[in-house]
Length: 316
Image (cartoon, rainbow, N blue to C red; front, side, top):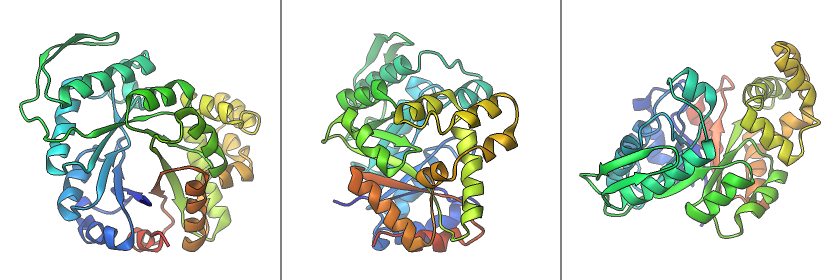
């Protein structure tokens, strides 16, 4: 089955104004709607609405951070979506970033691999209806049991960038979620998880033929994201270390404008899909051809009507 996803909610569109579009998504060819969680909506509420508006869509969090909710609360949130969207909800979890965890949510960002692994193992038990009392490496749980156990536990996927987390996703989860990669990067990521594990990627799409505007927006996003240590390491592993070296040096020196300007055009064009809607769809299909199972469009603002753009970016 060909999968095609969109990130909800759309920028600048009120939650309740999504109904007509989400109801249309399956007929347009979309199979999935995935949420995000940074400083906008939480990851679960938009999916709860979508579950009632489009009962055939698969719904997923990409991602719910493992640090910003306690393990029990994360299990309850997942169980709620699994109840209203049985066999259609995917719980995507991951570490998020030190800024979101520590600076915005007063959490301690330590041992990210271990915390993700421990949370995954706890969720497997809790969502199966077990009473959990366990000493994990990064937290302990005593006598937790869900009062409303989903009839079918949701699939759990892990946000994963480099080999360690990708292998954890392949060995213990139901798939891997990644982002900020080009079609040419997909085979390297795929090689770490094997041919049979679902690979999901959020792909930033800027449907405009104003190349300079698209690149300017892309540069701003790249300098904001790829200077985060985990993403810097990811792109070093993918082979972009030298291409992004000047950006990192200027960013570290406090020269944000210079850092943006130092990002080569080819890196922007690799990592941000832009052009006419038809050209964007063709580019998205190249990710699938390279081995991606589920492209999830992250629609970037262009000044156009985002609802119309979602329609125009439907699969051909």
